[in-house]
Image (cartoon, rainbow, N blue to C red):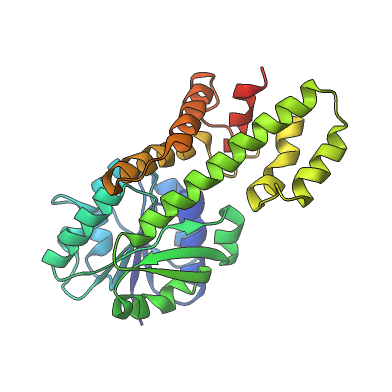
Length: 288
């Protein structure tokens, strides 16, 4: 049986780990704080005191962390997981990171004869816990097929974008488009309120008309009600992803003026104390 190690037990990582364990894979976990692992340990997972210890006996090692610095910390260096992985193992990075770091990590893995896949996800905590995430995968076809049985434990849909780092590129495209949708929705709601429109009708119209999208439908009620305590995706995380998207755009020679403006809206929201609110709170920047 394939032995899996998973590093990072935040809201997404914990759900993914529970699905891997439920699928019957032997699982070792590591997190900066052990408390988040207790339920998994009670269910049969093993604890490791470092990323290297988690990876030492694993066939597949997965990371689900918040940003590039956290990813570097779990993979690189003498106590990092990559140094302990055995040749022929498989590294899967599920975090949303910079394209440059994912490319570098791929090269580091190749130097150690370790297979590599970047597999950032879209979905929420509930979808992670139910095994219904969508994964964007960048990997050689043979690597993806090796990883697929484990990925199927927590993903309903797997989209293969091409070689390593292509999935990270698309994940940043996905998130920057979602942020633009959200910013436009916030401005539309602000104008509708100032014009004195029937906001129930506005909510129905934007949710069903040609302006609708999943982002619009999932956020219009919260924006109208100004309720942002149900944090599905922290505002600071979207600001991070927009920063990474602009970096990637510069590398590829893509002009992203709308994304640049929207990133500044998220920066203003953070300055207004909304870093830990749901990302829909960016709408408050234009509402006064």
